[in-house]
Length: 138
Image (cartoon, rainbow, N blue to C red; front, side):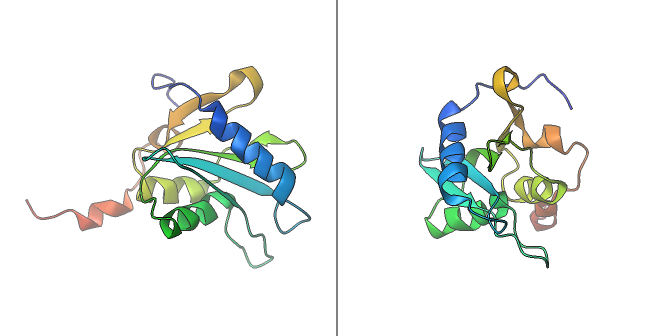
């Protein structure tokens, strides 16, 4: 992972996700919370929906919640685990989906004093971009 593109950490997002993890994650069905800042400045939050068949991660639920609220562009996202686990980086599936929907999104990773913000492309280098199939003929 490259470290050249660090940007200021959005501590308000970390606090929002932590608050949701603490107050809304109850039992095994909801163990992760996510918060994202939309391009218009709004903070969108969500929790995962665990199910033995798979179920969506908090980041994926957040994408749907953001769209339902008319927020189609996300600038920064973070996920936080329940029981004070702190920031949890997105899984591989979420990294790919975030890249596909928001190729310029930044992700908060790390914990404590080592928290940093990186581009999704830094977390998933040399990857296929699903949106490429929609490029107009030049």
